[in-house]
Image (tube, rainbow, N blue to C red):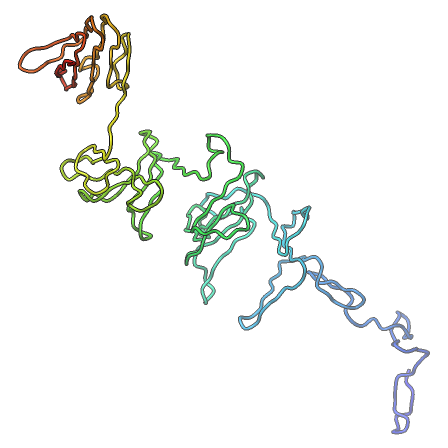
Amino acid sequence: RLSGDGTPSSPLDTAQQGATTGQVLKWNGSTRAPANDNAGIVSADNGLNLAAGVVKLGGTLIEPTTVTTSTSNTMTFRGGLFRLRHHNSAAPSGTWQNINLMGLVNNPANTVTPTNDAIFDVVGHTSTGSTNGNTLAVGAYSTATNGMWLQARKNDSFNLYQPLHLNPRGGPVAVGVGVWKPDARFSVQSFSQTGDGVAGLSAHLVHAEGHGEVRLGFGNTISTHSAAVSWRSAEDRLSLVNMNSTNNVSKITFNIGGYASSNTMATIVKSGATSNARFAVGETTNIHSTIQSAGSFAGAILGTAGSPTFDETKFVVIFDTNGSASWTLPSPSSCNCPGRMYILHHAGNSGTITLSQYVSLGGGPTTNTITAGQWLILFYTASGIRGFKLVSI
């Protein structure tokens, strides 16, 4: 219905028809009658929420959603906690951190075809938007006691592993040192490491394929290999290796009390005379012999009234009683020990020691007896035993 007659003093208008403030005339199916205005937003979805006519963030995303900003803008999330979790993940018990990411547990994949195995990936891209082909994946093992995992790899081939750099420009790296600032470039502190097995180790290097050799190397550049500690399981061999081989210069030293040469207790140096090395104890400068000592020399000494077993544990053997005895020496072939030396002495006043092997005294004579007061010094060769006798004065 209209009101007015269309003149300037009484323009045409919609008649009030009993409407109150805020109401409009609406078609109710048979006629137009006053009713409340329902204009405005009546619902919200896909991550938005409508409360008292106001649209707010907070709801359930019901379709794939991308939030995009330009390079000239900054998107900032502010609040007490920021949480992202997989749709199947229940809220964790305990205290939440400021930023919390949750995803399915999974062991790291070892397949060519990428699969959903990590909680999240970190991927770099160029200024034009293309990726550099690498990704850093962070995940959690299916078995809780195995802990978490971190893997750098190709983002299109999960079985192609890439380098992972920690502090590439320098700075300490520490494991288990608590809140203390480490002084060394790499520090490991262990707790409750007990026993003689793997569980008692602070660090464990393993090479489980091929010859099973594992090496810890040293060098003055990232690509220099100057020295190493090596374990080769196929030969049951632990090696301390100096990769250089300069005669009379390249060496391995054993120091006590410090790194300076004045703290060197023993030295192995490459020999210029043979393919072997020279080993010196207490001498650091004038090392000239295969075995050299700057002090005394001692060997095993045994006093006995019986018949000992002659093997690598014997050196000086003294028969310290009167009487006779029979001593069994190993044959040169069974011993296979060219250069071995025995010093034998009958310290009694009477009797004779009879040896199972004859000793060549040089020039033809041989002997297999040691009478009271005599010394016999003998040396094994590849095919016999040679020596000489001394008599106590």
